[in-house]
Image (tube, rainbow, N blue to C red):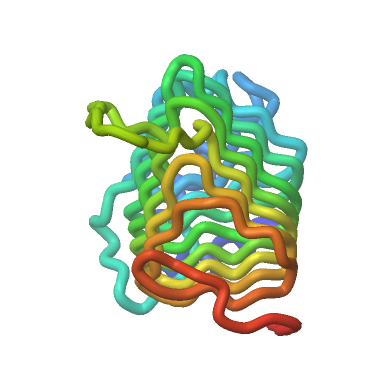
Length: 214
């Protein structure tokens, strides 16, 4: 009973329809054996392709600039694997292609209006905070040819305990080590090797080391 009252309170705070959230929770448990708390304007295509060991909350967290009519879409044609409890903000868009795999560790969250468009691979470690209006993209979709072109690998890797500020864009071939902070509105592409770095700019570069955040 306490858990139901707690869910009701959270739904009131975030302008989520408690009845719809509760009914969808029961359906996800009965049909799929999963614990999903879904705002009424969440659409999931490919729900069977989501693997999770914890609770997945989508669109029911309170963020002051969200509107209750904001829509969230998860189009999971490949695989979405989440190790533990996780939260996805309202207005997010996930598009994981047939050969794409997105793996997310324990803890952390994705804030509102972030786009994750993955054709190959995205790995996010434990306890990562991803701000609003971010974008992860591991495919060019078109090809430009020129002399001395350097090829970068597909896929994106984000280490543990990484904070990605709002408006950040991260592209294919990027590796971000543990403990790093990505400054807001940075455009990130490339392999970074030093842990606990502040990464910023367009294009992004490591500008400080030995940082700590919480």
